[in-house]
Amino acid sequence: MESSAPVQLDHQPEAVDAPAEPGLRRSMGPRHLIMIAMGGVIGSGLFLSSGYTISQAGPLGAVIAYLVGAFVVYLVMACLGELAIAYPVSGAFHIYASRSIGPATGFATAWLYWLCWAVAIGSEFTASGLLMQRWFPDVEVWVWCLVFAAILFGFNAVSSKFFGESEFWFAIIKVGAIIALIVLGGAALFGFHPLSESGNHPVMLENFNTSGGLFPNGFTGVLVTALAVFYAFSGSELIGVAAGETTDPARNIPKAMRSTVVRLLIFFVGAIAVIAATVPFEQVGLDESPFVTVFSSVGIPYAADIMNFVIITALLSAGNSGLFSCARMLYSLADEGHAPKALKRLTRRGIPLVALSVSMVGGIASLISSVVAPETVYLALVSVAGFAVVGVWMSITASHFFHRKAFVRNGGSVKDLAYKAPLFPLVPILAFALCLISLVGIAFDPQQIAALYFGVPFVGACYAYFYFRYRRPAKSGPTS
Image 1 (cartoon, helix red, strand yellow):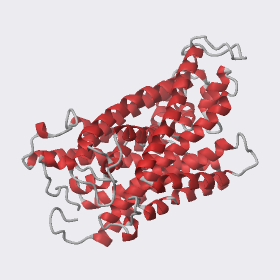
Image 2 (cartoon, helix red, strand yellow; image 1 turned 135 degrees about the horizontal axis):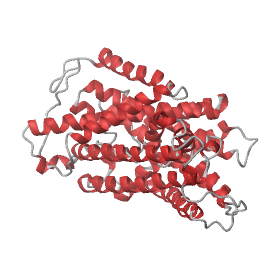
Image 3 (cartoon, helix red, strand yellow; image 1 turned 30 degrees about the vertical axis):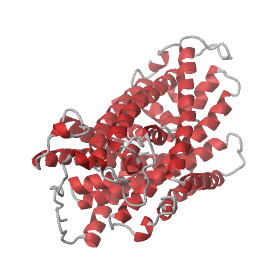
Image 4 (tube, helix red, strand yellow; image 1 turned 120 degrees about the horizontal axis):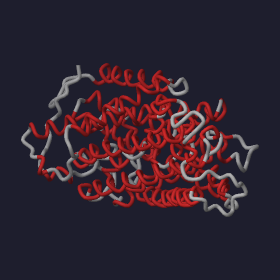
């Protein structure tokens, strides 16, 4: 049984300025953090699989699902803020769990998050290849996967600052696209669509009253989409991954987290509301981005092609953030002695190049999916990645719960914390419960249940491997 007693915690305020691991550079500021988080979040989950969410939950159900998702993100980010300042190290999720819960949980969390982004990279490549077929229908999807993989590898291999800058500008492009959708689509809903050739454009929220009522598939339709929605918000936790490469984490991490939550609420819920009110829920799916559908319905010349380009850029941006996260997680595992030492090798610019190369394995999944059945396997990839990120969120909230308990028990004062999550212990408990409910919900969806069939045994295998491979008495702290 893994001990829940954490190792000795330093509750002095100076702990927040602990240095990063040797070799990694603190070269990113708050604007980089915000855009890395935004870049990781705004990807295929919003631009492509949001169509699936609307088709399953209905227009109103989709908006409710994304509101719940944004609320859960806020809860998780509140827990993450306190942990990221207490342990400002790169790839820190498993560090949180290792020190607050136990080393086996930390090990499982690290590999689960690596799985999340390795699979997500594949889904972003596949989605990009599907959208490229709008212009190049005769070119196979796997060809585009190879091209995009090479581009993103190059962005990550230069330096963390170069990665941060590239992600900053990528994120600006797709945030601009979302703003355009909300403004132009919203104007059309109020009757202002002079370029639209169709005279029957929906007005206000009339699309919300479907032939099957406000919830055409019942409330179960909302429940089964929870995992897909949580996957759409995955990436917000990347702030914690980048903590070890951030200047002045005690000041910049809380600032970036607050900004990220507010922007996600506005952009995601606003975009979903416009899409749901514009496109009949029976006509959305994975064959075309709902963004392209909305701009086509508004009638803006060449808007669909422009949006297709922007969306591909957005998907690659999310993959860019995911590759960064995968590499840092493997580096951190190697630094802890729980992965091959080769993964800890750094270039002269402080880039874990071996870990970066291994993380490109996600691209293999995208190649397989693009050859076998792009749309079907894409949804399976999204489900597995969603299971993984929800598992990591549960680990973050549990880690925060035990960390705060141990901090006070060891003589620390909550008033001395540079950042503290509000309403403790309600916030971590509520976040954990909502994440657990989302995992239960996918058992009712035959298209997503594969995530449970794969995800649960994967977590079990991580625990089993840790106990057989690394179980030995520790010099200090808990034993496992």
